[in-house]
Image 1 (cartoon, rainbow, N blue to C red):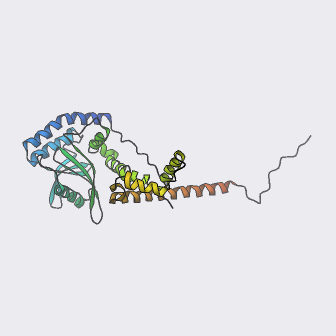
Image 2 (cartoon, one colour):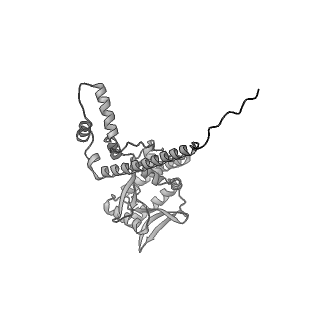
Image 3 (spheres, helix red, strand yellow):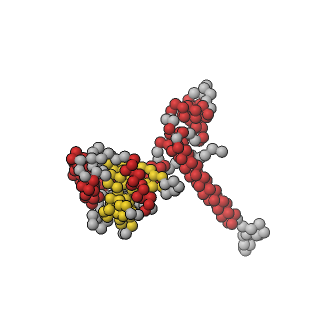
Length: 290
């Protein structure tokens, strides 16, 4: 039985006007500052100071109440943490501005978050900013959710605005990190590739093709083979991410199918309860006098 095709509507992330204006104004200043830090090859301590200023001036945090330095995690220290109402929202591991961020730095940041049970971590050198989500399991896994570079980001682009907004104070209240992550998990090339390979889509393409060219015989299998071999890139249909997308779509389809079945069953029961009992006599018109 073919998996049904489900369509997702992804709501646009709403960014307050004053927030994006503050971010744009802050970037005008700190783009030059971050580039200058890199050129001067300043120390990690100096970079932490600037990153803390950026979190306040660009991202809108209270420097004294919502940003903690040298957050202790089981005997070691992470450089910064965003703490709202006594709860850590994300950790920030800072490296010197002149250092290129690498996998070893990322592993260190992920290790801090995993030990503390914190889902979100940011790795930065003031110029590059990488947001990662930790997946708590055995083993611990992680995935990049968003990244941007101060030197080349374009805040006129909606997607770049959203990436920067994720780190802001306002985004914390909206749960924007989780929302953005969910949207990127759903709306990506792997999911679209799986949807294009669905039986319902292949049948639609076949009907359209036969309508245009009735003399040429084409089966769904022919279309599927051409799609996989020559239209789509192999990694979007055969990689682990492709398998995850297929599994996610199947789970979602099953949930919706169960929900529809329950709704149909309820509607049938409601319909039956409204029918008069079979033993009830029909209602007759009252006798006419005169």
